[in-house]
Length: 130
Image 1 (tube, rainbow, N blue to C red):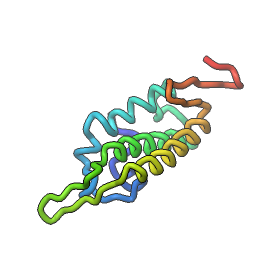
Image 2: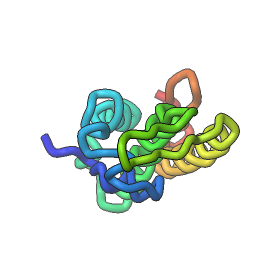
Image 3: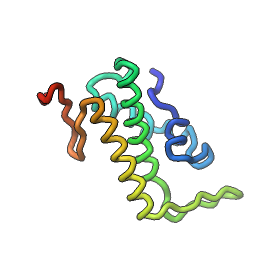
């Protein structure tokens, strides 16, 4: 099965390069595969089964979700390896970035009729929960 989102989608959202966040990292179980399972569980169906407008919202939600996971895993002290230096992301900056991504994710899920919170989700149709 092909992934619904790509590593480039996540990097573009975070405005980082493939040197800072590689395809290999994003393909690891904690990132895009996790995001794929997450969006499918939130929707109760594979996002590819939705119409194109709803797929756009699902894609935006998943990209924001995976981007949050990337930000939380960014090293606080930064990393220097040979000529490569990854500048640190402060805890304060992480909190602000994650809050923006969480709001983006919530908005996209709401456009799909999915109410999300930290304790799980409920899908609503015509205000009836199930």
